[in-house]
Image (cartoon, rainbow, N blue to C red; front, top):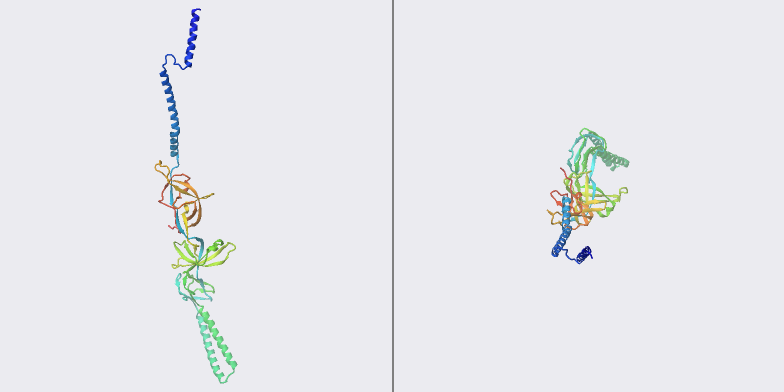
Amino acid sequence: MSVESVEEGLGENETEARTARLKRGSVPPGVPRRLLWQRLIVVVLAAGALLGLLVGLNSFYKPYIIHKMLTQNAAPAQTVTAAPAAYSEWQPALDAVGSVRAVRGVDITTEVAGLVRSLRFRSGEEVRAGQLLVELNADSDRAQLNALEAAADLAAVTYARDRAQYAVQAIAKSQIDADEADLKAKRAQVAAQAAIVAKKVLRAPFAGRLGITTVNPGQYLNPGDKVVTLQTLDPIYVDFRLPQGELAQVAEGETVHVTSDSYPNERFTGKVTAIDPRVDSASRNFQVEALVENPARHLVPGMFARVSVASGGTQRYLTLPQTAITYNSYGATIFRVKKPTDAAAKPPRPTVEQRFVTLGPKRGDQVAVLSGLDPGDLVVTSGQMKLKNGTPIIINNSVVPADDAHPAPQED
């Protein structure tokens, strides 16, 4: 065997030995076993730290970043007004519009023609029953009355003389009958002429207030010409109409409250005095008459009036201002104020939630809420157009919507 073959054999054996040692995990020549373990531990720790960092970012930092972004991009707080829902005593009422009518009212006219001699009143004056108002020229009528009275007196004397003669059988009974008939005729003529003279004087048929006249002394009046209007103003009637469906809710004697645009801060009180027994077939409404006290004479005939008729007993309703209600195609809703839930917010803001509610009757600026709301709930009364569920709000009640059960028109 040559030297070259021996060296080749030794090289192959050494290579096989190294391969076997590597398969058994032996440390390569020149590398300490302890150093290899240290490197492995460093690699494992680095991988664990990286994995922990990823888990921490996903579990803690990512939600924080998302919350911060949502907080920065959240809708700003909206300024609104709010009021608590509370119970109030509610008198059910039927509302209507009507017109004022005098209990007694008339246009004073003359029955006979004549020339106005004098006016004994002033326009707008309060007069008593029987007070003299107008005198027409009646000189010729009085002269004729005097002549008729003289003829009647003569007929009476003739009748008395003839009766004395008839007592002694000086004349026939027929003459007495003729004298008696003539006396009655003369007296009837006197009465007729006296009535004509009396019609030349116009007097107030009842107490009341006079209107404005355009008649002047010296003016000639024909029969039926208007001289002045006379109206009794206290008390006064108010006529109004209600739908036939409310007929059972109205009865004579029920209290009526009347308001007028002319006196927005004053309410007039009266009673229902009559209900028309017939319903209008065209409008299906029935007429109601109320007698209203009017001591200050503020209500005058022909005036437009708003009428509220108390109907039934007093009810207790949970009420809100009508401005708190938002209407849509699904019904009526309100925005209820919720207490702040995010303690980390600076400052913490209350939010709102939208609720559906069932409404009852309305009264002035108020509306009754039958369901969907609890007593004491704070409800947004203005600014709802800017809100949606969860919107933060700022409550500023420096100026609040009206919440009056009996509002009156405002005048500058």
